[in-house]
Image (cartoon, rainbow, N blue to C red; front, side, top):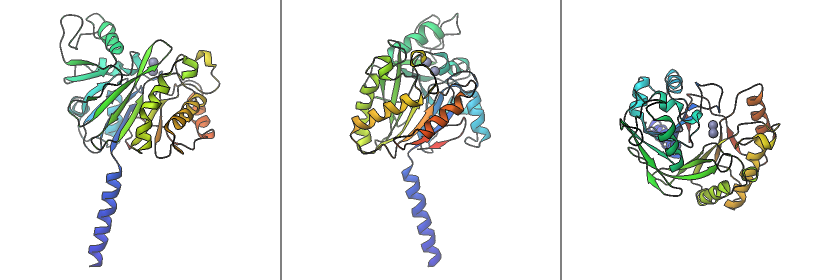
Length: 315
Ligand SMILES: [Zn+2]
Ligand SMILES: [Zn+2]
């Protein structure tokens, strides 16, 4: 009897902790330049399902190798690439966000690429051309191999991510005004969500309202406690002159923007939302400085996560 009760208690605990987790996030690359084997790419899927959208695709193969080493996957690198990654979201046209997808395209399986119309134009006219590479996509230079299908998504339009149960919306960001980058809000059938931002400057520096608009759009998710995490960049430390940020954030600017998010959301605090810091740029002691500055000046008492390549994060 006693044994039975213990078993039941254990079972209940396990099911409670399982139901609290909704997404698996697997960083395949976490840096914003420098190391070509560790550039922005994050697999996001429903917990345990192995049906992912790749949020940017700077590094694929080296990140999958790390994940296999860490026992996150028990299949070959090629199988993860071909079968587990169901689609791509590309935040903007810079190489550190898409070079892994281009280089691995000959081995890849057919899938959709979701992006803003301006990003699709960059892919079509600069990368999937028959002189820069081979046109593996369904538009642009002839011949078109048609492995990838461009899905040009205008801001605020909700869409389903093919071969998953996930839905998403894309939002414009400013990455040296008027150059556009973008963010994506991915939601599951339980209406829980994760927000991923590509490269972005702060509104004050960019003379833009894109972040303010994004914060207003995610405010209802925060009020209903449905936003699990925000992946946002901090590329430089606080010593960098604001005139030389080239559309990126520092710890100080991140805090400024998150304070605005809290105000716009009209909530007491942002606790419960994991803040995952992406796109740290290597060089000298910069990464160390960024981490120290964020941890020392954390006025909103946020839960900060510094993702590591190939290590799964449960959300
Ligand atoms: Zn970048
Ligand atoms: Zn960029």
